Length: 172
Image (cartoon, rainbow, N blue to C red; front, side):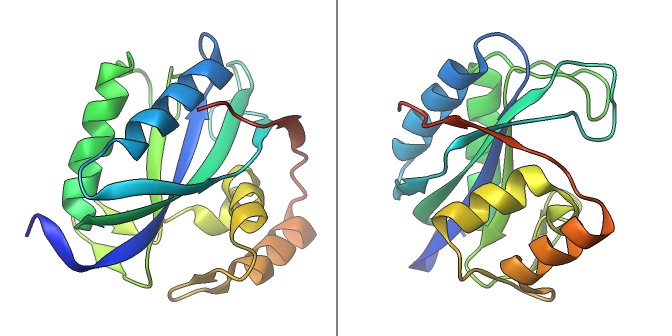
């Protein structure tokens, strides 16, 4: 299936820690807005965060966008991976540095589990750098199978507070 029967709101996490991260994220958002059957509804502020998983690399700049789309989840994944490649992403070490990273965090209230894609994103509840920007643009978000994004944020902050620095809006 190439398009969903009804438009869905997908939330995508964007991250970068190489080059001009704010500019690259802005360019990625502009390109997401150009995807077929899709348009960007909202974009969070940009946040600076320490790397997750592999610490010997530069800090990341992160944001979350709401994308209204009729692309089904796997087709959306194909487009986001092509967009990453067009912006200069090359394979590095797992959780390593990158020019751009695009993750599908949520796709409506759908749950997807395939070898290529898991929705909700498997580590959504453990990553402050996506939860806080998500809450900024969609404070009432429900994460299928996990409850409210706000509850996930509160649990994460009680377990492992992760400081984020808001660094401003992203031009796209």
